[in-house]
Image 1: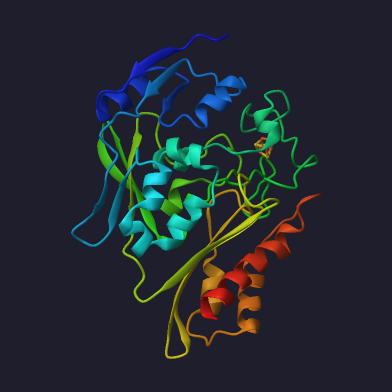
Image 2 (image 1 turned 90 degrees about the vertical axis):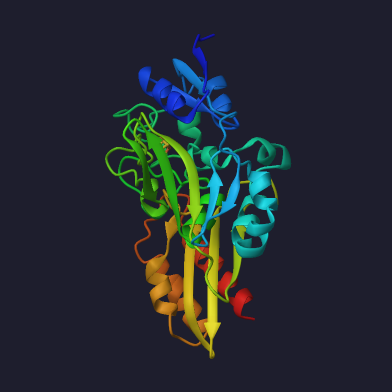
Length: 327
Ligand code: SF4
């Protein structure tokens, strides 16, 4: 058994300060990632800062029409909220496709954003893994890399896919992460929040050690749009995506007026397919156009020994989603 200090965060500022004071401290919100990884002896925090009672559990429509989601809003509350179901159905669908009811009841928005990868070598605590033990290598590159490993955004140091469904929908919607620390509050574009593994796979996000995520602010919804989250996986529930797509689309006068596409299960961070979007904008919807966009989305893909199927599967996740939305 490993001893650790338990600190109850009584304010946002004091929680961030407590987190920064001890090397190797960790925030505890819903606990659906942290407690698993502590039991597996993968994460060994010297201090756990409990933030689940901080006053960050509100969903508010801001004056400018954006929607602020507190970091302690649970995945269930977010998925079921009327404003989300009405204005951001793609987010609601993505949330409800993830995990199980029990886990969604505990998992928080902030925790979902901060969750760790599902790579088995990371979680076994003993295999070479640059993310867990910098410089030790990556057992997945020549090992089991079928399910939870990426073909986009990988590096020679790490190929683990980002596991979140919620973050894929937020990437398509467009969002901002609000964080607070001793220098005050700042905003980070959601697309810049998660980092590519590059040469530093242990650095997963843009948050500083003395900062805490307080809110995710969703951009205004796309006007006159339809949207859908399509998740392809080995079984129908309680399973991570092999490939997923969040698509938001508006069609006007027989042409695609605007479109946003984000991908999950295939990339090392929630992946915005901007090049595919550029293929689609201004064009009349057609099967050939959708196939061309999907092809473009995976132009830079790098498949590994067992996950090459994710390229056509990811392309199909785009084509099918676009086809359904324009049928
Ligand atoms: Fe570790 Fe990343 Fe390699 Fe998995 S893919 S073993 S998380 S370095």
